[in-house]
Each structure stands twice: as C-alpha cells, then as structure tokens.
Image 1 (cartoon, rainbow, N blue to C red):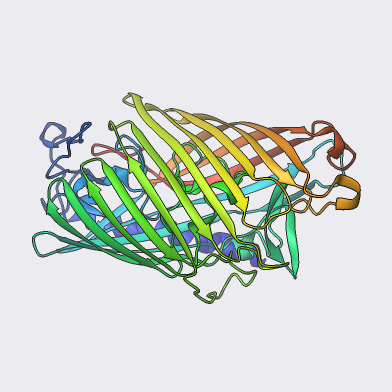
Image 2: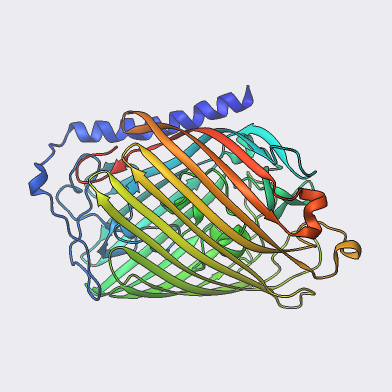
Length: 469
C-alpha cells in the first residue's frame, strides 16, 4: 500500500503541473505557426534574442525565453546543473508564465518489473517490482536589462519506491546501505536531489558570467547527468559507469563560477567530495573540500562537447579515506530527422585515479542512442567499465590485490507511447541487457548473464513549435 500511495503521489504531481499550465494557456491565444520565430545560434556566434516556444506555442508575454544561464542562448541548451546539451535537443515538460517569471516542470516515472540474471547463471542477480522516479521544477526572470535569476528544485521518491537498498543492477557499485557497500545494486536518489539558485550577467550578446550555488547541486564536472540526456530518457537503469562519469550530479554543497564566450564556456566549482550518505530524506554536511573545472563547446546546434577534471576528497562513506582524481570527456549529438522523427546520441569516457590507491587507474566508456519515430522509440547503450575486486566486494586473497576486471554490457529496448492526456504521455517499454563477464568472475555471475525489464512510463509531452506529442 505504501508504494501504491507513492505512485499516486507522483502521478498527481505530474498532472497538477499540467493543470496549472492548461489554466495559464486558457488566458493566451496561440499565434499561427508561421508567426513563430525559430532562432538557433550557429557555429561561432549566438542569437541575441532566442525564442523557445512552449507547448502552447507562445513565449513569455512576448519576451524571449532564454537559457537558464544566458539571456542570449536558446532554452534547449539547458542540461543538468550548468551543463550544456545541443541546441537541437528536444525538451519535454510543462511551462507556466506570470508577468515576470517563467516556470518549467518536467520529470520521469517508471513503474516496472526488472530481473537481472533471468536464467540464474550466477548468484548476484535479483528481481523486483519498483518505480524509479524524479520530478524537477525551475523558475527564472530578468533582473534589469542584463541580469537573469533562476532557481531549481529536483525531488525523487526513490527511497520509498525503490527502497534503501536500491534496485538490482549487475556490476553496479557505489554508496551504501545499512553500513555496507552497495554492489550489484543501484542506490536510490535523495529526496532533495537539487536545490539551487543562480545569477547570470550579460556583458554583451557574446559574453556572460554566472554564479551557481546548490545544496544539493551539481558541480562543473562530467556530461549532462544520465537522467537528463535525451539519449537515455527511455532507460530506467543508471549506467554501470555512473560513478566514473556523472555521479557528482547530487552533491551537498556546490558553488560554481562560469564565463561564456560565444559557444565556448569555462567554469570551475568548489564542492563537497563525499558521496551522499544512506539517509535519503535529510541533508549531508557541506564540506567544500573538492574542486573541478570544465570546458564546454557547442560547435553547431547539433553538437555539445565537454572535457572536465575533478580533484575529489574523501569520496567514500566507508573504509579508509580515499581521494580520487577524476577526468571525463563527452560528445552529445541531437538531430531532427523529420517533423516527428529525431535521433539523440552520446559518447562518454570517464577515468578515476585514486591518489594513494593500491590498484591501477580505472576507465569507463559509454555509447548510447535513441531513435524517436513519432510514438515509437528504439534505444540502445553499450558500456565498458573496469571494476576492481574491492568495488565488487571480492576476496582479494582469491581474486587478486588491486586486480581490475573488464565488464561489457549491451542494452537494447523499445518504448511505445500509448496515449496522451493533458500533455502527459503514458508509454510501455521493454528492454534487455547482455553482459560480457571476465573468465575469473563467471563462477559468481555466470558466463553471459542476461537481464530483462518491462515498464509503464509516465512523462511530459514534447515541447516543439506549438505542439507536443
């Protein structure tokens, strides 16, 4: 019953945001399609007054609706934290306007059955019914002629719908439950996954400077977090390379300074290095003991590139102190193929090197893509990750001190939209994952374990030129 009430709460929240949007739309008239301005920046320059249409086809009382951290960039470039997506990336959500403010709400809810190791080849799989979820709300307004203020809040009820020990995910590692490291499980996200504010000042159409503060928030490190990338929206599972690539997306204590010149951006953060603890309803102690830097470049509206470095202190909740130097690089691509067809892809590399570790540096790589054919989406993901015996909670006397094990995982899935009510889509989906296992781990995992999951998905409609689907 507890999970049922939680599911209803999530559904009610998504529907409530759309009701507010519908009430706002009632007081506005939709202009004809040919009166809508489609402005996108091209390589080497930006558009001074970008306009992003809402699901009702109009901008905020005639004012341009900008990126969250620039008055001179399109809203589609918004990612997670201060990260960039391509300008051609799709946006799913609801918009509400007042005289001075623009608000946006979006989210993702999966009601699913998942089974990792469906043939019981090993001893580390598991199955269950659960509901990974998150919702996010943002607001922004102008401050004078050149200022922009924004705030953001992201919430998740994973702790109730996934429970504290997380959901089955072979070869996943990171964070804790009941004083023990989570292995072959993906941890739930915190109730408060982001509470942040930011201010941006436009010195010219080509130059912005911004400050961002979050508790929790996301430092300037890594690609846009997996749940916010259009190429991974359909997949309920986190990447098994999550703690190499984008695990800092929930950090209790972040401050970031950034500077944009045209389509280049450089930014740096001071943040808390320790991963969130297992108390998912509270707030962790801010430490501000770690640093990161990121350079981003969007050469055309279809591409977003970044490279970043972080120096992270005392990462883990358990065990001896371990400082880690982390490096990532990523390429995100978005292309509209037709009126109702698009493809979104990402390639991500992550590298962890323990400052005083007893094993070699570890690499991870991910390639993912989603082809959206109107109501049908076909998606896939390939991962290669190096996991240590320590991370997989293996006896190092048996498996080797500091030994790294390569893991391969290939996921294929299909998402089918069934119907839309109040700009909210209901879809069903199915996906499977094949794992390639190192020979020395086959006694625990089997030779090539398979996972299977099927789900019902609830999510906002696509915002695009006066319509949504």
